[in-house]
Amino acid sequence: MAQADLSAGRSAATAALRSQGYVLLPPAAAVAALQLDLAGLEALRGSWDELPRDAYLRDGGHYRSRRHACFIYTSAAGELAPVPRRPHWQPTSYNALHGGLERWFEPIAAGVSGSAAWRGLLGSLGELFATLQPVSRWYLEAHQFRIDTKEGIGRPTPEGAHRDGVDFVAVVLVRRHAVRGGETRVFAAHGSAAVRFTMEEPWSMLLMDDARVIHETTPIQPQDAAGVRDTLVLTYRARGFQAPGAEG
Figure 1 (tube, rainbow, N blue to C red):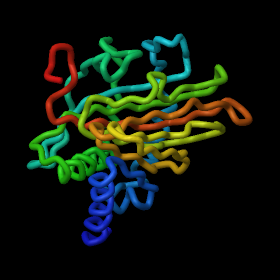
Figure 2 (cartoon, one colour):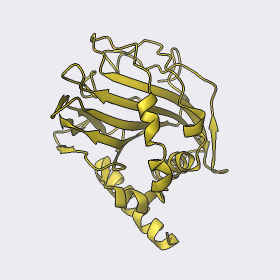
Figure 3 (cartoon, helix red, strand yellow):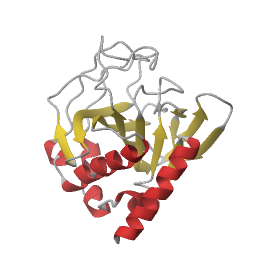
C-alpha cells in the first residue's frame, strides 16, 4: 500500500475518533488506516476454534470461550513486547458483574501472538491511538472471544453497557456464523447521542475512545443451527495495567 493511502486512511479514522469518540471501519477502511496483512490475519482464524471455556462467568452461562495476553507497546521503538502471564482485573466501577475478580485466562497461543500479522495489527493500532493521545508506551491487553449459541443464547457483553477503564478499545470481528442479533450499541458517556449497528464482515473493527463512549452488544441467538460470534478485543492504557490498588 502506498504511504499516501495509509496516511489518508489513518487521518480519516483519527478524525472520526476525535470528533465523535468512535469510528466503525469496514475491512477495506481498516486496511487503509492500519496497513493490515489480511492474509496473515485470516491464517489465525482457526485459533478461535481452540479457545477454552471461560470459567468465571457469574451469570451461570457456558456460552463464552476466551484466551488473554498482555503486551507493552513502545512508540519510539515501534516495539511490541509480551508481558509474563498476569490476571485480567477490572474494578467494579467499570464491570459490575465481574469487577474485583482476578481472572486467570489461558494465554493466547505463541503462534498467534508471535505472528507478523498479529504484531502488525497491535502495533498499527498503538500508533493510530498515539496520534490522539501522545504516549511513550501503551499497556495493552488482548482478548480472543468466542460467543456460541449451543445453549440457545450467547451474551457478548453480560455486564451490559460499560466502559473498560482504559484509554482506547478496538473490537475486531473475526467471524459471525449462523446467528441472529449481536447488535452493537455505542452511547455518549456524557450526553444523549447513540448509534447502533451490526458488525457482519470479518476484519471490520470498532475503535473507541473509552473516556467518551459506553458500549455493549446485544445477545445472539442461533439461526438454523448453533452459531458463533468470534471477536478480538484490544485495550490500550497509558497508566499501566489495571490491578488491585493501582492508579485509577
